[in-house]
Length: 345
Image: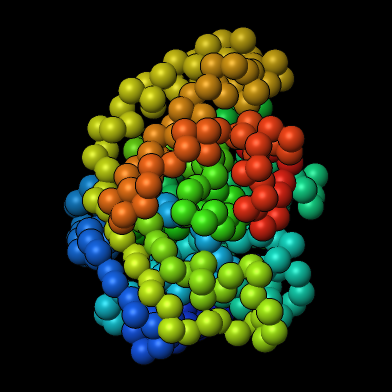
């Protein structure tokens, strides 16, 4: 996707704001919507615009469950209007290249809506944990004054990152706000149990020069707005639903101190080996893999707490394990909208 496909900042802001206003009208005009903890999100957004705060220098990442094709942008309709007009506080997110960027029209819409294309291993050999978009978002999540330190903490020992855009987005202060659905695909379990979280979120937490501000979210009811078993007219969202969106508190930065220290130790050991073998171990070695699995599970646990707080029964412990979703091991894959190869998470 060429950089010139992206509108000027004002045009992108207009598109995102208009879409969010439509989402707001749908949420509160045609459905019964309850919001909990919105002040947890708006507090961070306010502090991001105040120079000298940790929020203005550190990456901001929101994470949530993923239950329908309309989760984003619908959930952002809960934001007060003033937050829809500040370009520095409009979220970026990731979207499947084979769905969101399948033609020029959808590519233009999603690119201008601050969606970055990701490749899925089921559909492209270019997918996986180390695809260029992850490196690009690592840079976008890093304050311009700290970007020279990014390389010294990344999973790349040999090769520099390859950007998706022909020219990288202009430096911004603060770093971008990125929303991710770490399950990696829609999952419509009857009790809204979640899949395991993929390891991209672990790369962000481990590799950024400073620990990111991570804010968990959980929503329910949106799966009924656009259930995967809906019939004609399939393209229309279904109104009259009970929707709940819960924002947790931002996790304390020191939560990541231990895992980030261990990551630096793993990286230093691999760097000492050097060359292709050192990079292979940093990407595929047992220590690096175990650490990514642990961090992804830590983030999932925070979203799971919100899920249980919303009245759902505790999840089956196996629901958070990647091996659970391999065909033949359980029936969990039946709730996946688009089952993927569960390798190189």
